[in-house]
Image (cartoon, rainbow, N blue to C red):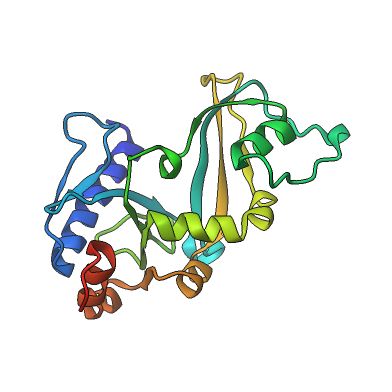
Length: 210
């Protein structure tokens, strides 16, 4: 198991523990297949777990927008690109960067997840207690993207690994975590702050009225 895989499994188990402490009974769902969604709750809610380092420096949540594209992803400046509202975000990406999208990010895969929990660390060390946590429903995140799609499209960061050991590249959008918190119904804060709001978080995720 690689160091990255150890960090991934550690944060997945930690996310389970945090959700249990909030009062949302859950279990790791990817033990048989690592491609399955990370966590399922007792009620069937599907939750993806992510972690991010250097939050103190960047302050963002890095949304995996394109999991795999083929061909070298090079911006074709001859196109005089302007975001086209009449086609999808993915099609705009293909047109601007002259590539083929093979797989969209988990957020956009049908029926893959219902919510996300992201553990943020201020440094590069993954330890028992994250500095901040973001808990957000899929619908809230997609709504935020729709409202801000033109601005966010211009923030896309390309990971062009083609030609090395990988046959595909990927792309992400850095989204300010505090902006998500202010503009959606999501929850963001320290472990202690979220535990104080545990009833509100349960209501938010499980669609139960207080």
